[in-house]
Image (tube, rainbow, N blue to C red; front, side, top):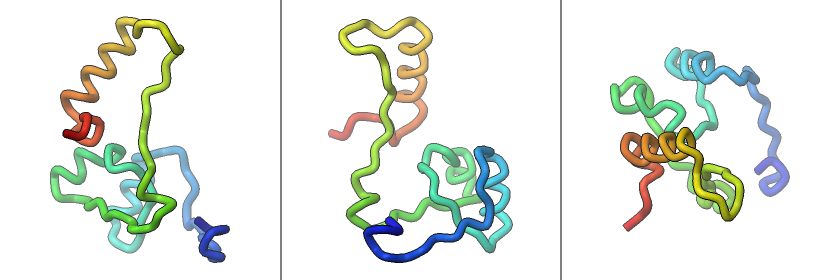
Length: 95
């Protein structure tokens, strides 16, 4: 995005902690680039909101479960997939 739009994005905080990023955003003066599923509970509770970024580079972003090709899912991976499909609407197949 920086290269395509010739802008520089300077992060205030770089962290691999979703909890820290969500607390920072909840403070009211910050935003974070993250998938909606990362804060699903907070969005459902009305604490945070998800805003679509209407830019061609970001509209096609998808999340995938990566597995070994041509092999049935192991029981834990299948359980994770079933859980995601049941509880996370953004992972359900589009009609």
